[in-house]
Length: 214
Ligand code: B1M
Image (cartoon, rainbow, N blue to C red; front, side, top):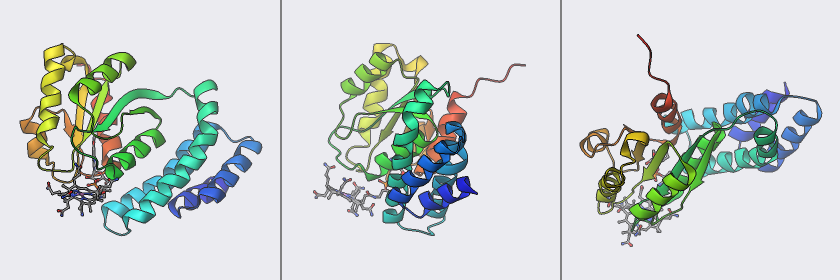
């Protein structure tokens, strides 16, 4: 089936073939939302799970993410304009003084693949820029990455900045990066921690889920 072929093409990191298959799926009249969820995302989920199990290497993940992006770029205008509502906005970046971006980019691609609008501020992002972007885009989620033990304290400093500006209550803060732990995330008052990119998506879904009514 075409959607399975798309999924296999993404998990195999085949960007050109993925574009061709997505074009074919759309020409055959398949729904863009289904091509996204049952084709592209299904493929990325396979590679994400393999990555979690140490069953593949970073270059394979990056190639898969690139293939997904190739397909997404064809779907994005249709999803945005065709009644398939994109999910909430997420402000993403690597903290100030830190220029590592491979993991952050993977997180961004996974979140985009899941339908979120990711406002990626890049690397070396000061707290004030995170704050300005959250306000400008009225984004309900801030996702920050830190890869150095010397830059981890910037996560806490940014949370303190949100508190000072009075926006902490309305923003869910998600943190990650190799030296960051769940305990550290709790200690600095973040709302969530994801050890790798695939679980960042599950975490955002949980954080934004409406509170159960009793
Ligand atoms: Co640097 N570096 N680096 N480096 N680098 C590390 C991180 C280091 C562990 C290497 C080492 O010493 N063993 C070490 C940090 C030690 C520490 O503080 N604990 C280190 C150092 C010291 C440095 C420099 C200081 C070296 C120097 O100049 N003396 C320097 C600092 C520069 C700076 O930022 N100011 C530096 C520079 C660089 C390069 C520029 C050469 C390059 C970065 C290129 C780039 O990113 N574009 C680089 C690289 C490549 C690495 C290593 C080798 C690989 C990092 C990486 O991309 N991993 C790294 C050693 C290592 O990890 N083996 C190292 C792959 C990536 C997919 O994993 O980013 O962990 P990661 O992301 C994961 C999860 O952490 C998670 O999901 C991702 C995918 O599953 N995740 C999130 C990440 N962000 C998340 C956010 C979330 C949720 C999950 O929610 C928001």
